[in-house]
Length: 300
Image (cartoon, rainbow, N blue to C red; front, side):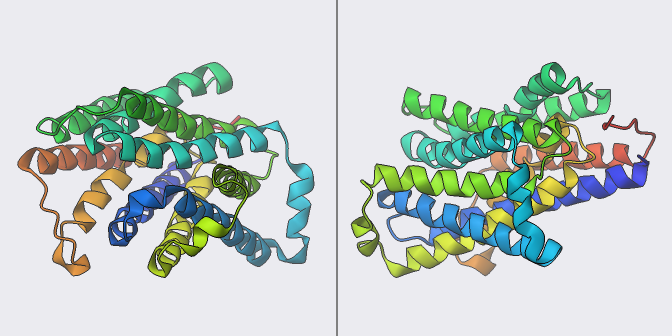
């Protein structure tokens, strides 16, 4: 693997984080979003699965279905972990403060680094560790003036969500022969099935949700699916810790989109949030710069 391949992968995952950041905008436009969590998760899960199936059809033609005959334990576990991340994040942010959820999200690179080392034998580059620590400091600065009160259960679920995404990142690098995109399809279906079960195996709750919420949920599914396609493509060349580090751009991008007037939300961040966001971005860009230099292959 050459440095160009690694840098291209960096760009793909960087863009994935930016795509995911637009999810904050869609949620802000929803009507009484906290009252329709499971309906939202159901629609988003279904749309993610459908979009990935369309992508596989475009990429491979009518034989795309053969990918599902090659599903292994890594796909099933990855689907469960990713569905856990999907669900846990929404629960966490509705049960505790955004600051606590964000703090838990910042743990992802460290969890992925530990899991990647013990499961895949991935070594951690010094520049990656440095960038992870700097990004973590940036997150701490972002939440410095925010309330850290809230449900302890919400914090625990936030940590479970971060762990789920970190472990998903490990599973898509675990067995190279396993189709990666089927993992995302399974995650969408698992998330939708879980939501449907919670809603009592009934479609009745969906009739009470405003139609604008349904459309926004589908749009959010498109955003998440697009980001996951880019993320999965980049996963071939990046260790698990680096993948989750770059995904923190979702946090920075989300702050920018709800701030700038073009989307009409106008949530003005505090000074510490801006400083923390700049530090996170600098850490990620520094890491990207280091990828253009000498790199060791991350694949056997």
